[in-house]
Amino acid sequence: MVALAVATALTLTGCPSGVDWSDYEGTNLIAARPFGATDDAGDALWYFADGLLAGTTDPVSGETAAIDYVVFEEVDSAVYGSLPADAVGPVYRLEVRNLLPNGDFENGTLDTGASWVEADINTDAPVYVSNAALAGTAIAGSHSLSLDFGSSDVYYALDLSSALLDGFPADATYAFRYLVNSNRESFSMEQNNASGPGDASNSDTNNRFRISISSILTNQTLEVPIAGSADEAPTITPRNEILADPSFPYFSFGGYFTQGASVGGTIDNIRIVRSDKNYFLRLPVPFGDADRPNLNANGSYTVSVWIKEDTGSNRFVPSHIALGLDSVPDGTGGETALPVAVPDDVSSWQELSASFNGFPFDTVGTATDTVILEVLIEIGHSVGGANYIQPGSLLMTDPFLEWSPSGV
Image (cartoon, rainbow, N blue to C red; front, side, top):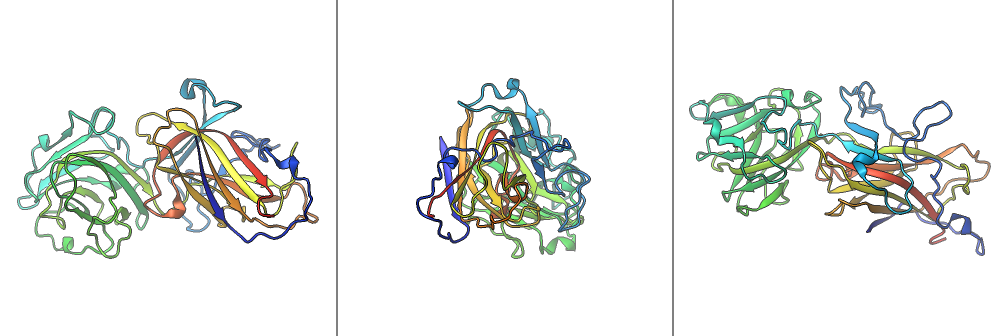
């Protein structure tokens, strides 16, 4: 199965007619640069921009990463089984990490790195622990979070400043997703400070999200965010984005602002990721390389890669990956990337592709080792905003870059 997306980046210019382009047909222009390839100094050719791995500093924001937000590592055949036909490997795991440990609840506990807070807003008294337990019938896997609050004054909240792997630094932004199967026609959640009743600070909803979903389909599994169904603070767009505020660190099912919509049902696969970063895996591509023709200006470039599901605790198949090219190969901008939907079934290898028309550059006098562009591969699609940014993990192999004279 091949998924194909096409973008027009720049207007094509003419090329001489009658030129023999057969050297490019079916030729992988990055065949000498597979996953795991290194340069003469032993440094990896595939890389992440600074700010994604621990100890590196984002050149734009100036933030030094406290953790690895991404993983790129080789796996063996015990993990991936067999290769797709004609593939040569190696196979690598590409992952954007879920910042919430045990977001799938599959370690058999409610442990997510911090304690959940349970209380009745009107009395500030704890609710029964049985109201928040591992579900006997899970949405996915073996365990889910079960909530059943008869009162709309009850909330069940998690302190993100303690739970998230990166510590929830002030003014960072996060996107979240989760599965819900509600036994009520309404469902609510919000960002709050989990303080006692009557706390005036809870009347200020600026820069904090709240979701109150009405007329929800009961006893059916849905994924939040649900487009067009939420009432949120006006300064938050989209509905599934959190602005980190150390004074309001709680990710709360039920709560202060959404009273009137009690919570009942099952929650699973809570995924939280920074939405103020992009997560491109990058490969610099020089004008010339071993055993292939030089890069050509204009025409059409197609980026392809084989993918397969990557099973494991707190790992998720993303809804999309992004494939693209960067015409400003320094990690600071110039990316042209397209979302490519991941098929519903990736238990076997699937090839995904995206094509881009028009990357003109001056070929006259260009040294063969001059980097002309970068190939981009990303879990999710950061350019598409918070609804496309998501943690996820896939096995990948045999990246391919092909040029054709389409349109020239």
